Structures are given as C-alpha cells and as structure tokens.
Length: 532
Figure (cartoon, one colour):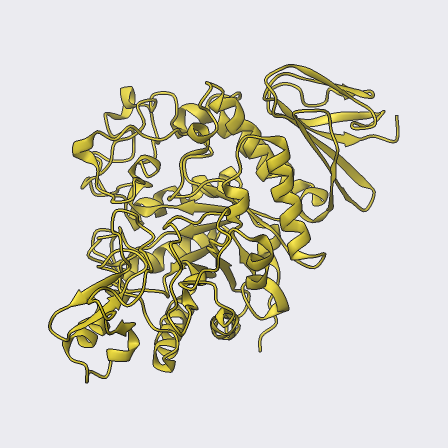
C-alpha cells in the first residue's frame, strides 16, 4: 500500500460547478475549455485545489448526477481530451484536481441498468436494488426519495413486475453495493480516472451505500435530514458502510498522494466521524451540521466543538458553508440586510479555522441567490437559485452574459452582476474578492493558521473568539456576529498585539493594546506581539 501524504491538510479547495463557471462556445452552458481559461485566475487568487462537479455523459435529469457513461465526458462540457488538458494545466499551475464520484446510483439510461431491467435473468439484474411489492400492492417499504416532490423512493417496472429503488429521481436507480461485481465495476471507474491524473474524488452521498439488508421501514421519517428525528433510519448509514469505505480507500491507495472527500450528509457528528476514522476510510468528510448552522454564536461554536470532539485529536475537520445544493451564504445569512457583511465574516471564519476549507464558486464574490423566474426553473429540488452562472466582467462592458457566455445563459445571472463580478472586484481593494485573496495569502504564509492548535474562548455575547498557535506564533481570531459595535478587551485579546487582517479594509498593522474595537459584523485576526 502506498503511503499517503497530507497535502490536503494545507489545501483550500474551490468547488467548480462546470455548467455555471465559464462558457467557451456561446451555447450558454459552462464547459471544460471555459474552466481551463480561468485556472490561472484561481491559482492567482490563492486556491490550492479544485473540486469539479460532474462532467460525465448524462441525460441531465439531475444535471450530471445521473451518469450514463462513467468513462466519458458529456458533449455539453467538451471531450475527454479537454479533461486531460485541464489536468495538465491545473497541475502546471500547482492546482490539484478532484472530481465527483457518484457510486450510489447511475442514470436509468446507463447500459448496466438497461440490461438490469430487461429481464429478471439478466446478468446485471442484481447490480441494482429490485424487490417485490408489499402485500397490498404498494412499494416494498416506506423509504422516500430525498426529493420531496418525487415521493416514494421506489418505482414499479411493469415488464419484470418488480420495484426498483431510487434514493433520488426515478431516473437515478440505486446500485446494490452488496453485489461484488458492482464494487469491482466502480473500482475500475475510479482506477480509470486516477490513471488519467485526477488527485482524488469527492464521494457523493457515501452514507447511501449501506442500507438495511432487511429493508425495514423508516417509520415516517421525512425526506430531508432532520436532527430532531429520534427514530432509526434504515435507508442509509448502516454499520456496514465502513466496509464500503475501506473498499473505496483501498483502490485510492493504489495511487500516490490522492484524497477522498465525503459528502457525508449525516447530522450526527459522532456518526459522521466514523467515515474518516481508522486511517482506512475517507480522508475528509463535509460536516453538514456545520453547514446548516444559523447565524448564532452559540450554534456555530457548538458545531465547531462537536466536530473537533467527534474527530478526536488525530482527526482533521472539513469546513464549508456553501455548495451547489444549499442557499448562498450572502442570502442565507442576510435576511435582515446584513448579508454582505456577514459573508465577509464567514470567509474569515472558514479560512482561519483548523481544518480544510471548501469554498463554492461565487462565494468569493459574495454572490446572493439568483432570481429565477418560473419559466426558467429547471431543477426539481429548488436549487437553480444557487447555481446561477459566474459573472467575470461587468455587463456594461462584456454584454448581458457578463463574461460567462456570449450566448443566452442556461440560468439567470445575478441581477447585481455589474458589481459582483471578478473584474470589478479585482480592481477594488475593499471588495469581497480582495478580502478572500488577502485571507488566502495570510493562511498560506502563516503555519499557525494551517496547522496550529485551535482553542475556543468564552467571549462576550455575540462574539466568536478562538486562538490559533504553533511554535510560539499566537493568533486570536475575533468575529463580532452581533448587531452592535463592541470593544473586546483582555483576556480575550492580547495586551500587546497587532491586526494582521480585518474584514474592514485598512486595519492591517493597527495596534491592539488590550482592547479591540469592532463594528457590527466585523472581524479581525490579531497576532500576539511579545516584543513590544
């Protein structure tokens, strides 16, 4: 087995949603050549790695998460040669690239499923989850699709007289990971992309790979994950998920320096920690307890403490507060008009915690949810608003496509694109993008922020405070989440120190002599100075 390095502990990941990143050919849909054209910009901003959402051949019922050919690129995004070129250019720039692996399900158009549904005697029949119905003629149990509008997670297939399981759309039948040929087939999918040079995988819904083998009812569990649910789920996260993870990790470890990141949508941090325990499972796991926190100091602190406690001293947290499935940070935390200021605080939080941060494309600009008219809605699960295309230049200069496309964009861009675009924000030292670039430079140049210890402090009401320390370098991060200005004094801030970076421009180098003044929704990173 190859020994893995830990580059991913120092890395800051940037999620690229290909359909909405950059369109090179004017068809209104982002593509791989468009991504290649902007890789240098991502490297210059300070990101270390990118995560590419699916680009595989697909009917696009779920925009790429319904894969019909795991080894090919969908023509809307380009070609396999384009993907190879992307990897070469990214690696030349020092960027690692991980891609989505979707092991739980395929498209109903995949050759495996077409064969499976053709006959009960098909060699692929047991590759998917087929069951007889209940005695009353209904589905085999009460499992529901994760998309509430779909309803039951089972669809009856008249030609063979059985029901097949789909945790999401009926177009996305679940594979049966109890079948060893499925495990080997997906292992070969992984090997194919690893040989091409990808640096790892973000694993889609790994908790779904282990379902109850007795197919017991969930007893009325709602479709959406709910931390208030006190019963037991049987449609996911069963104990044998550990075997699934070990199989995936064993394949990955055949290749040096690769990483596995899990979309572990389990709202119990101790159970989530099992997915990265033992050194033979995932390397990183997104913590959705953290992603779902409200704007509340106690809740944010509890989520951080919960993750650190669950992972233990040898564990490594993964932090994100946005992705292609959840409301934009600036909108989610901005219901009272403070979205932009709070989004700046969030970036400081993400980039100064101990662990590996993930930033969703556009959040470095402070993009809000897009406004999507009813006639432009394409997603069954109300996610169009968070998938609006990137704006690269002001529409007044680049046209209505704002540098994303010369054509008609597949989803509307933000109506604030004149201000919330890359070109404009690069020229503005007070912009969100400028702040993110400064934070990334600070993180890269400060080992205490990348690898140092973290200690949360009991701060004044409305203020989140924590210390980072490594080899005598001591930093204090102070984030005022409240709506009032405040002066934070010792013992929370050092008696002698200086501001390394603030969310308000121009405070760098300012002395902190036992007191730090912060406006509402303002934060600062302070270095203790013992030489003064």
